[in-house]
Image (cartoon, rainbow, N blue to C red; front, side):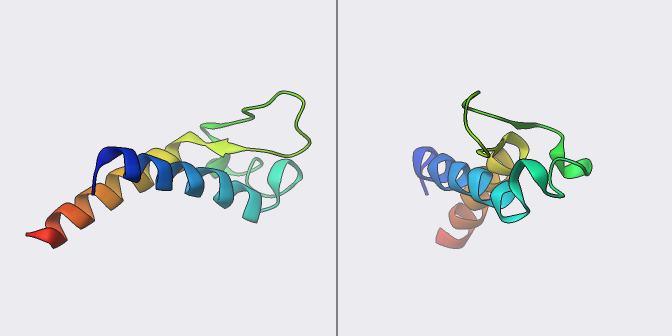
Length: 70
């Protein structure tokens, strides 16, 4: 898997995961998981991006698929 594909999929997970746990009013921001979570658009009502979740997902996908290919 190429880095661009892994980063795109990680970015999707970084957006979907915080929104699945309630967005800005949910449990995501009020727990330890909220560390590293940013609001990419200041005027958005509930859009969140978890940078650690996105990067960890990208690295995990890259490692898994590169190992699986060999």
